[in-house]
Length: 63
Figure 1 (spheres, rainbow, N blue to C red):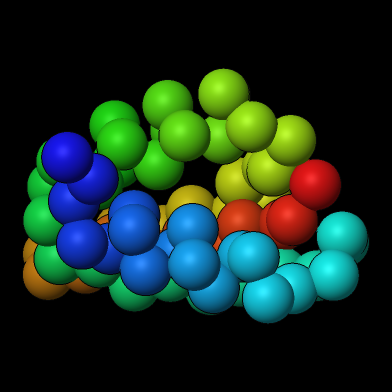
Figure 2: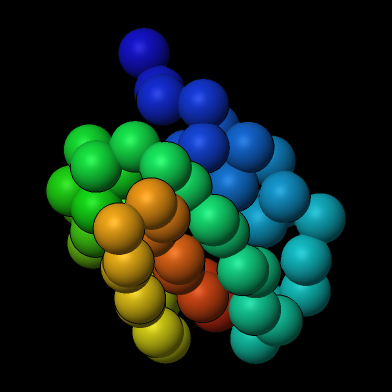
């Protein structure tokens, strides 16, 4: 079962054109692993990643 931030990101990416970038903000530490596995298994790419004490931020470019 997909964690909620990943599921929402997948749905949002479906509405984007190739090359567009989606910014995702998650609070789950497991999202770091989940998003990297997701892009490794897709045509998408993480263009930037930042984390602080509360959030994990991803900029995912649609492949």
